[in-house]
Image (cartoon, rainbow, N blue to C red; front, side, top):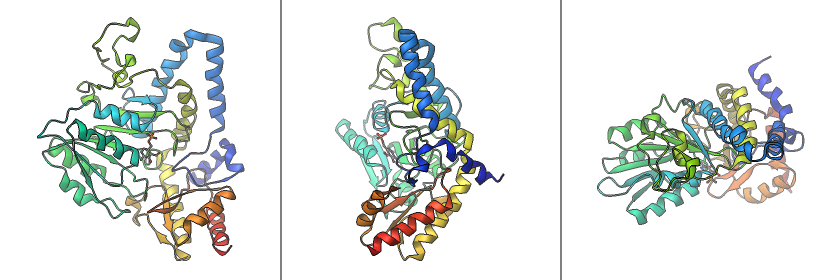
Length: 383
Ligand SMILES: Cc1ncc(COP(=O)(O)O)c(C=O)c1O
């Protein structure tokens, strides 16, 4: 069996694929069949073990899922904490720092996801000097970004793969420049984990975060926060909670004594049911293997790009393999209207202003689905 055939044999694990043309994994991964079993196990534990479920199952599950995610990020076990969403994680990261000049700069590009931009812009009121480097809306403005990172820079919170164009930033170049001037890199890997092989430990990335909803097929409520072990004990999130305490069940009066392991990053009670659905998706990603996923994705995004180019559409995703993530973004007059018509036919994709239609093959996507999708675009344009 070829490697692609092996990946496609996993289609049977995703009942949704028999019902819809699913090219929306950059926004919502297809539901794995086993998510229902895992969430069912959570309910059984609640019913059968009651209060003992916390120690027997639920808190260990936070570590199990963190360690599964660690495999995809290319970081050691024990270094990934889970939380509800990226916005919360970014706010917790911001709460670890004080923005006193002269090192009070936060540098990123205008291709960050909106929620991340919102969190950092609000740090201005705490003294942050926020520098947003403009881009052409498609490509990573690498030269300008690297030039903006200087001795005044404290943090560089950037997306690895940019949600609007699926362009990829050069992580090693960013880390190298940031470390040369004493700044830390916070990499948002939401759009890259599961599509691009990651080696965040080898790349010496300081922190990373993302979630389970998209390429990981894990459902909502399970975001992650990786911190390089050499940095972890210097972090004292002001947004904290009792699970960040070294002895949460001693209920000691404050101030908090931070745990000396990943739990110092947790805050309050983890969203336990979300861990169970997330586990299903991350397990399948690990089984599929991100190297294999990437190979298939590069071939299929090139195929989709050719299909839309043949029709004269504008492609808003970088051309080169190394600069392209898992999505093809394309635009034409009336794309917003066509998008609505396709959604009505269960051709799942999305439309974003200043980007156009976003469509993504994933490891479970066939070439026929891509062809069917562009043929549906043709029909909708004529209608
Ligand atoms: C790159 C990126 N970061 C963050 C988010 C979302 O953040 P949150 O988990 O806070 O909803 C998204 C998309 O939803 C995204 O594409």
